[in-house]
Length: 217
Image 1 (cartoon, rainbow, N blue to C red):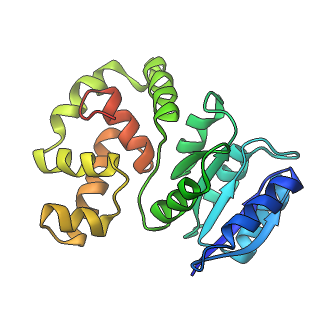
Image 2 (cartoon, helix red, strand yellow):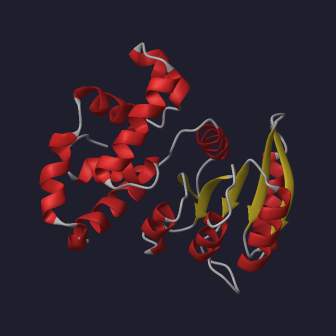
């Protein structure tokens, strides 16, 4: 059973999400909130498997809520549920720890799949969101042109293979099966990729790798 917490400032959106999510036998909505401050408090208390998080909320927006939650060790994985793929806060949400994104206009089956992919340890970027992230990453020259030149060469062929699997949203277990290696070895490669790309999570690693020409989205 995947326990889910809903964070959105519109009650009708939360009601609709709860209704469609509870049609799935493996989903259980255990709480909801309409403000960022309350979201942080309840997620810390309830420790859900998944947080569906809107970026636009009163008192504290979704990005700041993510930053607050990152200060406390937690297994809760975060799927940003946003209306606009052009939202400037999406990149900030990745850097704050979000593992995936889904647009509010997506079909319900796509929302279900997104939750399961992120819960299983994968990451999720819709093409429109990926494109926006790439443009923003490219504009951040402060990350260092020298790093961009040096770091791709530091990745091993196996790490590139793992990166390609990450870009497809595959979880560690799936990557291990596809590449014929152990899950522990996959975790080792993922950690090395994060370190070499200066990434904090899978989504950011995939975005940076694509921007540097290591993989294509």
